[in-house]
Amino acid sequence: MQTTQTISGVREAIRLARQSGQTIGCVPTMGALHEGHLSLIRAAREQSDFVVATIFVNPTQFAPHEDFSKYPRPLERDLDLCKQSGADLVFHPEPEEMYGSHNDVTVHVGELSTRWEGASRPDHFDGVATVVTKLFNIVQPDKAFFGAKDYQQQCIIKAMCRDLNLPVEVVTCPTIRSAEGLALSSRNAYLTDEQREIALSLSQSLSLAEKLVAENELSLEQIRTRMRDTMEANSGVVVDYATIADRETLIELNERQPRMVALVAARVGSTRLLDNRELMQPE
Image 1 (tube, rainbow, N blue to C red):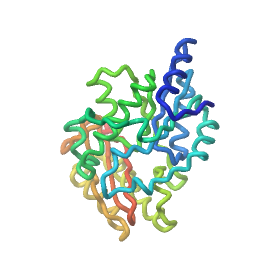
Image 2 (cartoon, one colour):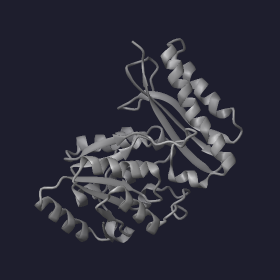
Image 3 (cartoon, one colour):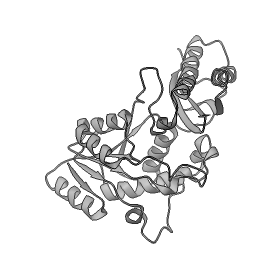
Image 4 (spheres, one colour):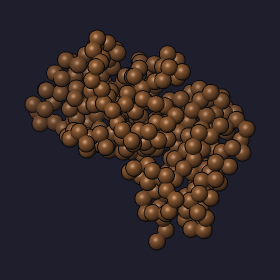
C-alpha cells in the first residue's frame, strides 16, 4: 500500500493506474476508522481495480462550537486498517495542501442543505461538498463509496455529481451497526458505557417507525411523535429531529409514498448522533 500527503503524489499514482487500464474507487474519510469505514474500503476493493482511501479532517465542515480540535486522529492505526481492508493508496494531506492560501471559490449546495443536519449546522454541507469536489478532482475516481448512516450527506453528494456533471458514480453502502444495533460512528468513542445504552433509543425509534409504517394504521405525524417519544423516554437524550421524509429531496412527508426514509438526530450527553432507515409503504 502506498501513502502520500501531496496532490502530486496522488495524481502520479492515478496516472500509472489509468495507464494500465485500471478503474479507480475512492473512499473519502475523516479518519478514526471503524468497521463502517472498512466496509466501504472492502466494497471499493470488490468494485474497483485501484482503491484510494482519503483521510482528512476537514476544517471547513466544523462549526466554531464543534469538535474539530478534539476529533480523533489515530493515523498509524488508520493506515494499518486501510492496508488490511485492501486500499492501494492512502491520501492523508494537511489542510495547507488541500486549501493552500486561497479558498475564494467554494461549492454552495442550496436547498437540500438547509433542512435537518443543515438547519443545525449552517455551512456544514458547503464545507463537505467543497472538499469532496476537490477530492474527486484530485483522485478522479470512477466510483466513490459513502455510508448510508450519513444519509443527507450521500444525497447531497449524489445531487452534486448530477448537477455539476461530475463523472463519478456514488455508491451508498449499508450502515454498519454494533451487535446491539447502534450505528457505528467515530463519535461513539465519546460515549460512556451508560450513554451507549441510552443511544440505542435512536435505532429503536427507527425500528418502531418501520413497524408502524408496515401496520399502515397511524398517520406519519403520529409515527413521528412516537419516534420522538421513544428517544425522549431516556432522560439523557435531547432530540434534535425525528422525521419521515422523501428519500431524494428529504422534504418531510405528510402523505405516505413508496420511497420514504426515517431520519433521527439527538444529543446523548455532549455527543450528537445520527441514524436513519429507509421505509417501504405496504402495497
